[in-house]
Amino acid sequence: MNFLTIDDLSLDGKTVFLRVDLNTPIDPKSGELLELNRISEASVSVRDLANCKLVIGSHQGRPGRYDYIPLDKHAIALSNVLKRPVQYIEDIVGPAAQKAIDSLSPGDILLLDNLRFMTEENMEFSAEQASKTIMVQRLYRHFEGCVLDAFPTGHRAHPSIVGFSHLLPTGSGRLVAKELKALNRILTVVKGPFVTVLGGAKVSDRLGAIDTLIANRRADKVLLSGVIANVFLKASGKLKGSISAEEEKFVPKARTLMDEYSETFQLPLDVVVERNGETAEIKMEDLQPDEKIYDIGPETIDYFSRIIRSSGTIFMSGPPGFFEDPRFGKGTEKLLRAMSSSLGTTIVSGGHLSAALERFGIKEWIDHVSTAGGALVLYLAGKRLPLMEALENAAERMKK
Ligand code: 3PG
Image (cartoon, rainbow, N blue to C red; front, side, top):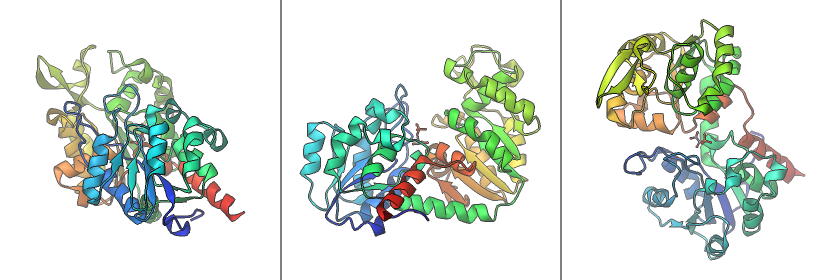
């Protein structure tokens, strides 16, 4: 490893900024946290920084989405996991946050509000630019060290990931080490064929990495569901209705990929929709232009499951259906069960699938359940993650 860790930094008694990823699936109706996986994974570093004045930063959701909420519930959940008080402040860089940070004693833990409530934290920067953002400039003088442990946000060059680490002694937390160790162990003995199962609501990271995954033999077959499948269905002319302008942007890229790798992509054959308040399983060609797809149908489940069971390595990122609503959970459950009973090596990625594995009671049957979603896709595709770069640059700087 070319970077430092908590153990190298002598942080006891110091004021430390810990960037974790507490971004958690949220129940769309109640607004409650649906699972605690990332929170309990983050708690390991928090425990190991128990003698510091600890300031924790995280994001939750994205602007404009239903899961873009404050972190008060996360503070309670973290406190329950740790069995220690966690203070929460509805502020990030203002006088209230600065005062709260300066009032900490060793052993205290303070969680700032959702960092993405600051526009800057939704933008990508070079390390130098990030170090000049308001967030970093207002806060870094209050800190004596920085620990980066947000492996699932490792693909974002956001101020909290690459800015503080440009100015402060910085090392990695426990989750970064755990993820890298597990992935390296699995990837050195990986067997083909390699199947990548992509779903979920986020398209851009996954689409951006697919060609590299295919070129690096990390995706001999790509099974598509969720919003990314809609983009490919649209590109192949099988989806008559409209998709959002945001998704429409990705259609040309999907078309190019399908032209180049015609045998690789497998699209849903049938889907689940809502008709007159009831769920309906219908063939792709029967989908009406105004109907929204909520899950893959039984024929697709069967077809994808057979491919999964006959593969050497299976990587799944993003749920195939809107499983938060149990009426649309069959695709997610059945594909995860196919993975759990496969003789191949299995990697499941991201918070939603981790929650689904918990719900179906089969988490222990998967070889590695990564906390990372999009970051893992990029990591597997061999892209350099800004968080890893920030850690390496900080180590280099500190050596000098
Ligand atoms: C994730 O869930 O993949 C991470 O928290 C990053 O979230 P983002 O894709 O909204 O940047």
